[in-house]
Image 1 (cartoon, rainbow over the protein chains, first blue to last red):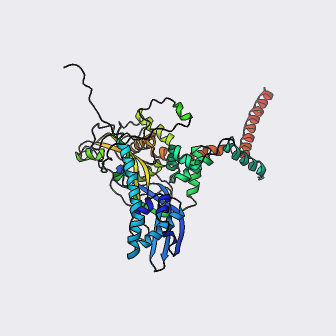
Image 2 (image 1 turned 45 degrees about the vertical axis):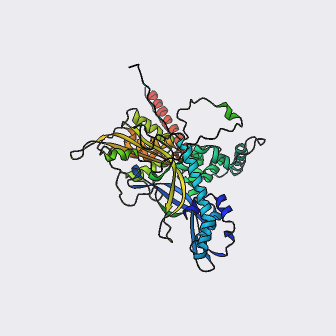
Image 3 (image 1 turned 30 degrees about the horizontal axis):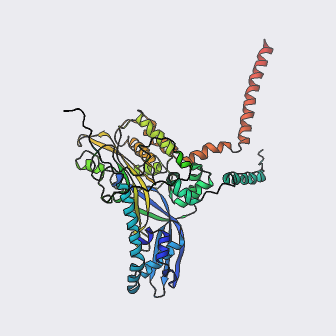
Length: 137
Length: 363
């Protein structure tokens, strides 16, 4: 679920194109609503309400009765639907392996690479302090 | 007798058509795309998300385009949009401890574990116009370090806390209040104050924060730690019953260190102010942290003498959608109100003239 939600729609679509064709009933058509995000006072103290975010959810049922659910930030109904189908397939013994290997693993690698890129660029801006020695003795 | 007057429908339609044309500008210039706004006017988008109190880059970009770059108008559009959407629930509190850091600086300690990470900042630029940006010159790619940053960046205030020099953050106190569900009442808890400040006008908070620095309720602040980066958002859907990650957002966080508070039982400690906001919004969260600390005056036993310490004043005037609504409504027709004032003024003047005439006649 984490990888499916975090991945960009283009990446999910290209990795899970075949998955979209899996026969399924839509239990809940993609629906966009709000989730209130929270912070903590002083980062670790009591919670407070920070502001909302758009979230799209979807629920599907496969032919064998397995249900799949998704909640994805943003308003992309196709993303939520594809994530819900993947979620359902991830619960089947046989299909789980395929989805993990064909969809989740490459998406996770892509996310990881993006994180490394961001982090190494930030790391390049790390300050090296040096001391100016004043006077001769 | 009150006579309702209608009219102006055609004028309003024509005004809106004219607005549409003016928004478009010179048609020989390509129309700006939402992608361009989202990618290149990033900080404007962040401000609209913050004060619109809705994290959605696409919607904020659309609002900026529709509002012709008037950010308060864009914020108004976002606030209106959110009222059309159902609330699915509350997310788990963001864990900024596990933030994937893009920038992290402390003005209190030079050598902090994890280091000073400048990130994408305007600081240390010369504030000279860069005329190369007037053209189409692509910038060089950002430099990369051989290895990534450590993922467990220690918190500066926690280091002080471990020594007992820093007050502990406010402890969990049940379900936080929500301004979008219940009207604000005074005295307001710190949870409601922070929610109000998080969606408050950046300019208003900046001015208040500045006033505390200039002596109106001074709090002696140091920027203990400022962080910018991404955090994952977890939410527990009813039908699943366990938290799932539904996405990630960029946030800026500021922890201010302020002067001391002690008591008969607790030795003096530093006190703290907190700021958190959507996107990259350093000025906003620094201001928020200063004002948050000022508003804790009552709790910390300080005399309330300055505007920034007066929660009713601050919280009632921080919202720019409310403020602009009340100020700008003055331009809408007030013909009847004004007529009554006119009648009143004429009567007052006539009475004075009448009294004068009577006085002269008597003489």
